[in-house]
Image (tube, rainbow, N blue to C red; front, side):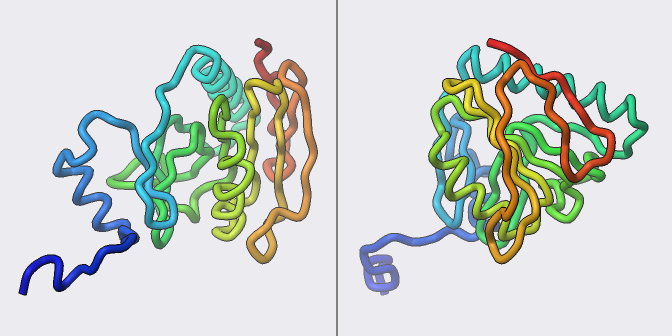
Length: 186
């Protein structure tokens, strides 16, 4: 039996284990990728505005978590895992920063995506994935619009509560008592 007889033409969804094996074998070279609902997504290069905002928010979160004595850790560039998805949010607040492999989704208190070129995906599919998997709070920072979208109260695959703030304003977490940061300006 040939490969064509076993796998007819079409689109095939990767499982997390398949994606990890391909990544470990170097199949993606030095390109940044993530697995979103079975599809390998090649991520755009990170330019200065994105990196500046991400680094500023990560630094502010580190300092704020220390100030309130939280056991949460702000991690940049970490991978999460669900059934068929391994996203790489820009910042993850987790109680389990150490260990092998991806950060356990159950340890995640808050996720941040910084959007310079990915706003529709971060506000759409990724927001659905995070809500469906019970991430308590999710922030999307629209670099071009200088706007922060804050989501919480996930129910039945969607966030039921939302508010907006401008970059440069103070932002308070809804689900983490006492957590407040001054967001960077551009």
